[in-house]
Amino acid sequence: MSEKQVIETEIDPSIPPEVAVFSYYRNAEQHGANLLFRLLKHLPEPDAQIQLSQHLADETRHAWLWTDRIVRAGHKPLVVCDGYQTRMGRACGMPRDVIDLMALTVVVEQRALRRYQQHLRRPGVDADTEQVLRAVSSDEAWHIDWIRKYGRQLAAERGQSGRFDEAIARYRKADAEVVALMESAESEALGGDLGLDEAS
Image 1 (cartoon, rainbow, N blue to C red):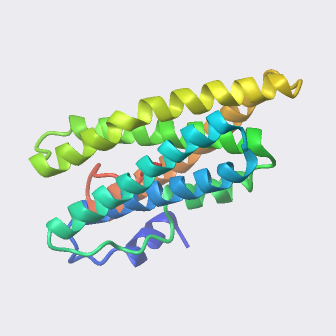
Image 2: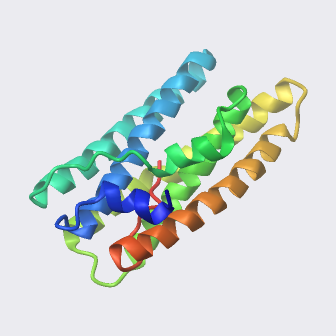
């Protein structure tokens, strides 16, 4: 089954394209929260637990903001079976350890921030959507910063300096491939650059 066929089976043509986009964003934030739950089990240090808890609270709030935006548009969230992180999982496999898990988190958070910034630059973004995009974007920079710093520190403490950045490079390559496929399918299925390469 092609990427286009996967997307067409997921999205009813009677549903406004922006509802599909918001549903993909929502799905990405939910998956991002799941990654953080996994990290909580592997990073028992008190400072990491504090940062992870705040980060997790942000991700679940972001998922709610997109849910609320969909409901306020008069719709219900779509069930997304082929979202960005699901596709990343197929492309990369399961992270081997906490270093890989943190590197993957950095890459998906960076993708989220880029996607939200792209969306903000589109002409004609309505005020409600702009408010949500700005709210979720405002958290992403510190998410990326703290995970990246802590991942590098943890790798160095384990005598594996450089492995964190190597893992990021590997995940970025997969990200580029996944996003290229999703953007192509999005353009065909939704008739323009509205966005299925959601984020975290």
